[in-house]
Image (tube, rainbow, N blue to C red; front, side, top):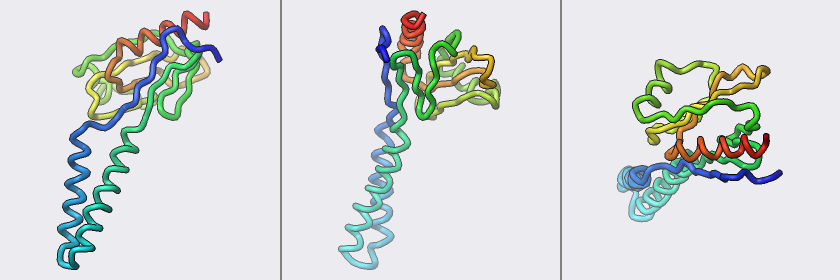
Length: 154
C-alpha cells in the first residue's frame, strides 16, 4: 500500500485535567478505605488512581490516520475514493453538527473535549452513510491530507 503524499496521524488524547480527576478518584477511594487502616488506604489510592487513569487513557486512545489510499478513524477504514468534499467546522458549527444538524445515519467520531471537527461527505452509492463527522484538533491539516491522498490515488 503506497503512502499518501501528506501523511496524517492524530491521537485524540484526553485533556490534562482528566489526569487530575483520576488522582482525585484515587484520593476518594483512599478516604473510603481510611477506616480500615493504612494499607487499605494506600491500596485505595493506588488502585483507584490506576483504574481511573486506565479509563481516561482508553477513552483518549482513538486515532485518525490517512494511510495510503484509506482514512482510518477509530475502528472504521474508508477508502479515500469513497469520500467527497470536506468541510472544516469551527467550534460553533461543530457543536451544531453534533446536535440538531446531525443525521442519524452519519458516522460520528466524537470527543467532547475537542471543539473543532471535519465533516467529510461519503460519495459511495452503496453506503447509506451521508457523511463522516470527525473530531480533530487540526481539521485543515486532515482535509489537506485527504485531498492529497485522493490525488495520489487518481
